[in-house]
Length: 581
Image (cartoon, rainbow, N blue to C red):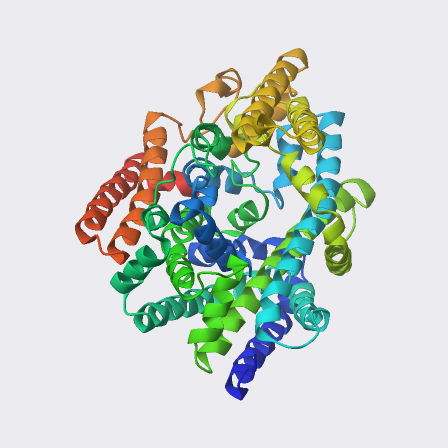
């Protein structure tokens, strides 16, 4: 398709803005790696939280939503909605603890939490495994997804178009570090939200309103229409067997490696101004991620099923609707949101990957005592190197798709030990090492059994997750009791610094002196459950109102407001000052 001059002007202005951000913050970011990787620990909650939201929005996310709806209906989004319990847990329990740890990367936690050679090995291994291997595979995957979007909007050679975007992203990221990442994230979020809402409004209006769209859906898809519009998956279907549903509800949210909010989410917790800002940032992210952002995409995805009922690749429904309904100017704005989302994902991956490679490998093991200027220089070199490796990965991605599935799946089931290390003093480095090894072995065995001797049992995601998580949990618990605990000196120092407040730290708490404890209790658990209720109430309430069930939606909103009031009252009772100690 041909873009108008106005579209090109809008796109060019954003590119100039992104480069300008890099130049503007380059001097500040170059002071030290604290400025370069976590913005000097001085971000207000709304910047840190919005950056979390923006960085979880890749360019292909709306396409994914459209594809899921076309195949499984609105309920297909439970593929990611099921993780709400995990993100609420990160908000209620871990955002404050991560900030109190006063560390630069999530892997640095291993240094202050564990002792001995196993801790050093674990930190070095994970920095290389996650910083290079998994990080490059993620970047390669994102680049391939961008090819699909570029193919709809421009006629240029895809690698040339992608190359321009990568040059701009790496330029401002190298110059300004995390400052460039979060500032461009803010603008990207505003553009993406506004353009997706505008598109949804135009699409719904041009197709006669939601009542007409739902009528057309029933006419085209007959009996399947009600299931397409249902928020609840049909348990026992091919998409969601009973076992997988149980795994989602009972296992997946705590078994995944993001259970305590690590990696680039934790990076933004570190960057927040204080504990309260870290808490509020993660809370804002969770609400925006689940309650605000999905519905414009879902509406366009539903309309695409009416406008393009026979589309061979349903993921192309979203960009085709963009090209079909948006006039010049708005089309450019929407395309900027895609381009900005792509660059936001890339800049986050290279900045976060560089942070753990420099801080947790190079600085920890190669050159431990050097100047800030040196570490910033190395960070900029590693940033460029990671992008090159990610691009090479994208070029080879068609041949390593199976490897990506295998590598990613090998970390299934390790979330339990990530949670336990905060709440139980007895967990040690061997616990995490064993969790990683046992998860990798169990998943690999199941993966290759299903690959070479496929059966219905092994192909069900739920059974694989339950088996891997159960085996991994049993192994790391056994390793915990069979190996020596972390040195008492290290545990006392960690307890005094982080103040986890869990009753399972009692042997250490009795020996720690002058520690004001933010005590963990049943009220926190009820606040977590209330947070889950808030997310799903506002998510479903918004959907019900949009689809015409006003009173049902209002009922959901009332439940969400009451649950939110409980959380507010709980933390007022505890005293918000506990969040800024």
